[in-house]
Length: 235
Image (cartoon, rainbow, N blue to C red; front, side, top):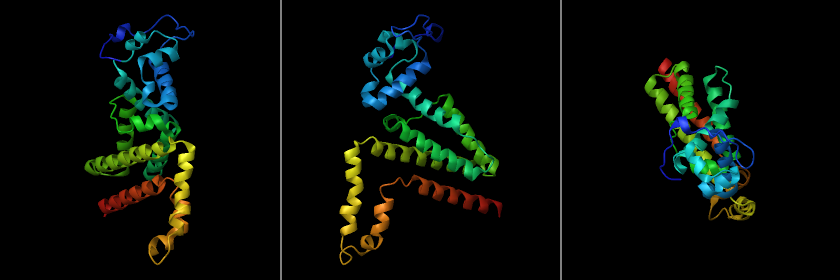
């Protein structure tokens, strides 16, 4: 896509596409998300999207100025999917843990899209809602504004970093993933204690733990540090 801009009032398509559907921003984002998982970044081409939608590629400019605009909408949709299924309980630590785990799971459900979008700032509705919500959880818990922002920043960056890392691993072909997992058993677990005493001593734990994501453990460490900070503030 290019930087052609169609005024918002002219964006709605009133006629169905060749496949009998009426175009909308939501339909285009959903289709782009599906194509990204099938084809990677190359899916975000006007030709491929138009073909998948059964529409003239030029009609996409009624909704998005260029592919980066569409990519931001895809990123925002991933955030929205998490927010739609998350329900706060009033326990700030439990709520942030649940939200973080849901963000991570949502990324793994769409690994290629997550790798492409986890580093983006969209400025769109769902992202704005997420920022407002997380800051609200922290401020309501009693964190001063500066601490709330600092913890929010660490929480979101940690979630997005693990989303990108684990999504990249998930997006690998299964034989490659299996081969990497076996390295811990076939290489590390067989290193002798006289040359690698620490690896040898912990080998059984490495074999079971390393193939899994460390995000839940890292999230718990972050929340424990935040709880300790809150206790300091209350003293």
